[in-house]
Length: 502
Image: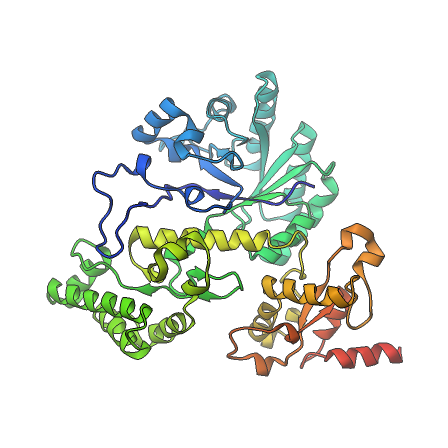
């Protein structure tokens, strides 16, 4: 099966490399399309495997001019390893006139896409009809891009029917759409229904707009998914109020809002309209907040007075002061930007967690995408079961607490360290309860596979920020299920005793 690939949808996600964070000034005489940097120009290692490009995103005259001069890949300044997936969508203009298969093929072939999606229509019958015409024209024209048949819908039978029809037409790659809000277990059931249809290990199955945590996506890979696209890690940097800065240990933090005090900016404009007052007052509070947070970063100011300066500006803007205080305190206490070694955090430091303008917010989004990609490729094999558990159905009144407990079991860096230590004592990585070895039973496919169970009682986990290696037990899937079978969770030693008695 092909490696799991992550595509991100391109939406003018660029930053000014010469932006001055102290003065908030952009580079003089800057021409964004020529001058600004994409994420793949900032990092030394990949942050995604490909870009998803919609036809509508390339319609501006300035982009069209650059494409004619240099080509799409050169305009985007893409390294060789980054692939391009094209999507014409259903309509080419506001009049809802649909793309024809000929137009879609011309678009993909002329711009040298690696993959091109068939045209999606208003219902599955029309979509399949266009897909048939699309692949026939692709063959007739000896196109070099890989044609991707589009299937959609949230019902198992309809997805299975459409995928089967596309494979029958000769498609070697299929994209499933309309599943972004599908519950995890339903998504698994849909994929399980499709898996038997996959003709061979070279077949490619793409999920459109679907993104979950890295461990779950790696589980979907075992069900036949070879690629997926989403810009969620990037977008959360400026669309999520709370969890907008990622760390590689699975923790998330709240970036500290210090908006620009300009009367034409949305937050300030709204505050002036609703509360009145002078713009100079906002400017003074803004300056005090920025000065305070930089002094804190330099070790020249304590956390409480720093928070007071930040929250004074918050309060004037109508923010929920007390709620922000707790989230901001955690960010400042942990100083996550100090621990991150990515190019963004090492270059701009504390500015990465200041929620303020495109050049900070989008850089934080690039950081998030980098972290997610590292988590996705941290191990070649998934280390935990998917996040759906039958225990959630058996104990619905404790579902929220159960999810907290399971989140402790999904820190990939911690699990990796625990496995490395365990392998030094037992190269077969046997279950600590029943001594089952995935490698002994399944051969090479089971190398290094084991699941992690948190042995500390849930009540003792509340308020803790990090788990330790000694808090984990490495167990097989069956024993893991049994450990979660009752409340409180069964202890490892107790389960061992149960096995001995049986």
